[in-house]
Image (cartoon, rainbow, N blue to C red; front, side):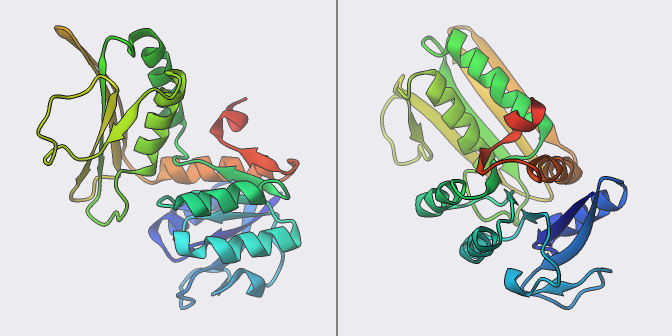
Length: 250
């Protein structure tokens, strides 16, 4: 049995994660962390990890990048593994996450979906075959409440493609101010925000007289919740290090 604490317990993702855990027999929730401690959840919710009533086996974080310092401090001081599912981290915060992984198991990915991680692998394969001849554009769509743009998943896709192409590409996020032709070295990244779109990502390889599009669409937050829970169960017994979905998939 894996005892899990949820950071962002009162948020939409936190509640979705709890709903999924209740349907499983290999894990349970022992506590939650949220700045709003007034809740109808049937487990204790505190406003700081240090106030958790019991030490969890793993923390799943879907809160806010502003919480990462206190979470990492707690996890390193107690030896608690952490699954990080939030996005929008700065380079400095990502560096702190990687440094923490030298002391504790850290699962860090920009997207917990199995389908998205397959999309990454397909995009890398396509880039290896087409990257020198085709222009590459990434379009991501999310709900109108999402703050960061482009999405962490779009960045993850771009980075995977760029690594496949020996980091020869530069990222272009906005074209309205660029009065020039598209450079072959570019990966264009475009963000759409509207309605209740959970998450859609298209990787477009545009060549001469043909276009190949790789797409993924999430219909609900459940796919991300289940991915994070699988990651937590996996992470419980791991050695210190930085893990992502490829480790879970084997």
